Amino acid sequence: MSGTDWFLSPGIDRRTLLKGAGSAALGLLATASGSSTLAGTREVGPSAPQPGVAQAAGAPDSAENRETVYVFNVGSRDVTLIDAADRRVRETRPLGASVRWLSNEQTYWDGQRIWTYDFPNDRLQAIAIDPKQVAITKTISGLGKGPGHSLMVLPDHKTAAINVAGDDLIAFLDLEAGQVKSTLKTGAFP
Image (cartoon, rainbow, N blue to C red; front, side):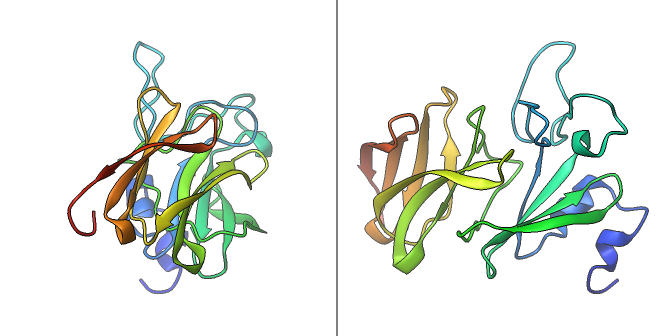
């Protein structure tokens, strides 16, 4: 398969879709209908969702309640919303940031926002994206010299750790206050 044929194939599953994202950072997220469970989050108990599957609230056939795949496009600094059931692009919206990495193997959800990073002009900043608005709603700038390679929300959902590779450190962020809580000096290029 070539081009986007891998995406349009009716036999494709979510795991293959995530692996095929290539240069776009991809996250399978809950729809803007208000679900608080996202891919990468963990719940326990009999009603816990399957890992990597976004849960949509409401009527299953309602377009606004369907699972949505968010593809963050680095070069164009926008996000493409794809209906997971139909495998069709709903729309592409400007974001104003180059989201480089979201993974179902790391925690980037604080319960309200998707946390990631960007490094415009080689200056690292943490950014929070509201999936309902599909917009950046919070920025923590002044983290240091880029690049960055990972931002991970810690289990308390109030703190995140981000590597500041250009300054050889890990910064711990207070997500509610929107500031650096502390830093840890590391070896070269963490």
